[in-house]
Image (cartoon, rainbow over all chains, first blue to last red; front, side, top):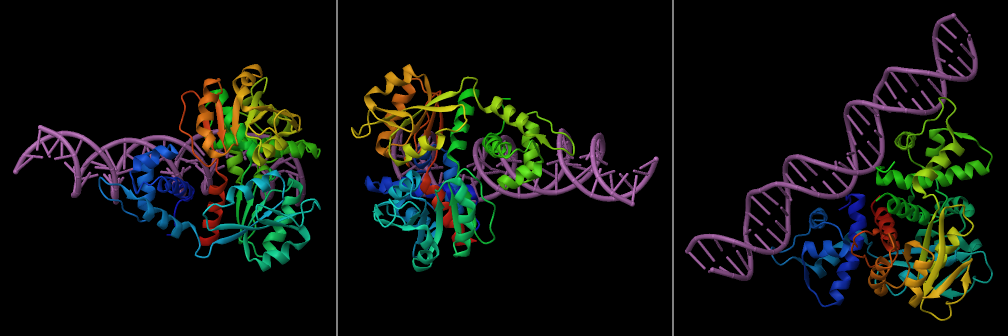
Length: 206
Length: 206
DNA sequence: TTAGAATTGTTAAAAATTTAACAACAAATT
DNA sequence: AATTTGTTGTTAAATTTTTAACAATTCTAA
């Protein structure tokens, strides 16, 4: 199950969350068009994605939600979960920590880093904040594999080097300054202003 | 200039920011491969995007950065800018406000809303926070056209209705619960956990 | 002054992603 | 029992997005 299209991977994550919500409501089965409505995509796309991961529903009864959730978990989670660090304990860093707090997910934020003494040596939503100097030490100790960079943009590039050298395998860069690729590190960029400007453009032109 | 591909629109926003950085460094011209390096995409893609917006560079001299910035502005900005509201003054809402603070952009966050008395009737980075009850009133007064929803997910759907009824044309939904489409409102969803899970998947499988 | 190198603009090809079409079949209805 | 309806799984078509290829042109240097 290692050749899924990028877009399918993104949707699997979304399917799982919606499906978990449905489970919580006591639903046990769901049709492709119901999933599609939840995420406002098309039913075909849902069926196709589900086909790609090799799951089969029951005709006229739909998909067993629990089974599907489990299978998606097998595909996108690792067995023991993955440990994550947040670098930069600003609003955005806190937002991430808060987001994952108490969520049933295999992804676990196990450390935060900052340089501001007001933030260091305290916990926020059970995540302890260390001084940036301890980056390498804590990454090794906690076997952290993924880092979320939420510092000011000037710091990002040097940090990415340190993270790579410390053995991280994935970086999610939330600063507006794009990073260059580093061998052996999967890099995902996200820029909040781009999203906003995209909305602004389509508001203007549609 | 109203039929640009989605992906091109996203990149234009990124080009502009990088180009402004270069301007600030005193550079006046830039080659397609330089832009490409800054954003780690290919030079062809840069040239193609620039072709699509109808700009021409000078052979062997590259693109005039200021001209290009101006043109991108004409395309993705509106003449008088667009007013934006942040709904939900949590970490994420604050992160957005902070992000846009003092940036030279036509997008302006002119109001924030919350229900928490600790947050209401105060300013954060020059953005005043109102009680949610005043939503319609302030949207009308400030002619706000775009809303960023950063509340807890339970509140999102009802809010989207109120925003639509109040005349908003674009919604950026940052809560993990996808909204359904509303006639006449451009909707962009973004989910932080999806980004993370995507990174986790590719870390696992590559 | 000619040859070589660098760079744009654009058409065409390739790759990725989405959508359509429909056969297969289970359940519900007549 | 036959017909209709609803739903999946999948192949094929369509669309969108990216990449390749290269002619045209300008600059540099021999």
